[in-house]
View 1 (cartoon, one colour):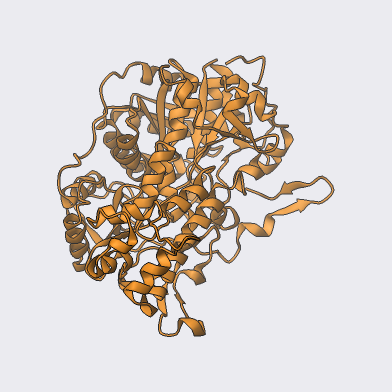
View 2 (cartoon, helix red, strand yellow):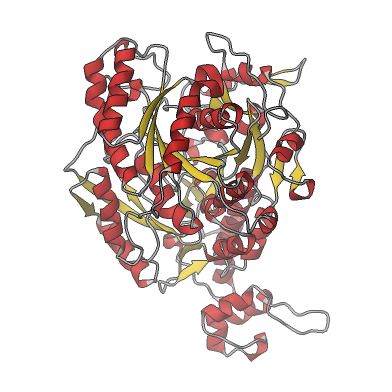
Length: 636
């Protein structure tokens, strides 16, 4: 990648200004310049303003025969509620590789939800001098992908309740007549999508009038069991009062009232489908195969049964294309998808990674981030994302901080919005060393997949040399390929050059295939127990509801899917307050659900909220618009 064209020199100041001030101090390059640097021709992308472009999947056709670059996943140790800087490290590493080590590189990250942006966490563009820009566009509407998911999800929700309503008031013949209305010549026909349902129920007839009364009943009446419905409405806002609601209170829907609720949009299965799909045709199949509940006879009901798979795909046809953006130092970024990490699989999309690996070519680098600690995002990256993509990573970066390691060593609770305890601001080597057991388990887990592990110690100004040395020594003793101190937050790519060199060496020295934690052909329980063992659990305890669901999904033929654990991100165990590397605990599985379209079974460990709430003092207090310049201020 030519440094004379797109790469820009940062002028860093100390102390580090607010993220939005740094982002606003740099004039982004026109996105066509970024596209040109990765050899994207104008017919392979659509411009969305000056600084964003949708990269079209057709680019893969032209690059089909070319080799892939090195594939790097960034995870972390078990984090504090403040986060340990995975996104910042991902961006800083790429700035180092592209702007200082003259490597072709593409960063692949998730699109942030507006829930956390306006809530307590803030945005997800990175931080300090390692950011994706424009920061405001990245953190807000971007190119509308989350809005498309919201619209598609809620169309399906509306179709479910509407179908139950109409079936309750009409005869079988009446349903068929309305589902297959006569044309101008008075002839009835099945729409294309209806043949999917006919095939599913074993009917080969092609004309509605040829159906027997029993076949009419079987075709037209889905007979959805309202108590089995798992599909909920979504919106991209933290709104705790929508967690539990009732629908159907209007006078026309009398007697149809049912209890349901809202999730945040990024928790929608459609988001998980977007992240795991490999092509437009694959996305069409996955959307149509999404199971929304069962019939009263126990048969899974899909979006295609409701006649909706095609319409959902139409709503998602632009969202499948990744969005091209840039870092502060002018290196390219592909932003795509944004599934929850502790509920869904927490990784950006397969299609973005595949496009990026072809664009950088052999000896180039693609760095993709996996959400939360490596026990969650990186485990799901390996066992779910890599299974569906067929891609093999060469290196896993694990981000650690002195702050988090002190917490795992027995330090006081870290609470977002409250000042840090004095313990975290002064030297305490013994506390750091005690907390390194958490990092060691993450290293061991990641190494078991056959990748080299590099620990990136995200340095803060309060960290002492003795504390930093303790971490690097512990990382190497635990089997890390290398451990590097990084200052990319304060210095941009320059502060992650050593990390870039370590990652390059780690990638170049791996030649073995990816090893999965479990095979797909074992039972659901055996897969759950393999993951629980990686957490340090001695066994698994299933609730009556979980046992019932496992039995049902096995009978329905879904037991060959990978497992996506819904678990707290704050501990290896199910109890957030259990820090370090707990072991010997019994992992409780409260319930088991399925995302059949996305392609995984997800057990619920304890209570997991799919709709966050706003704190007393949300981030939106600081967000405003400078009406004189039109610039967003206060984003963090």
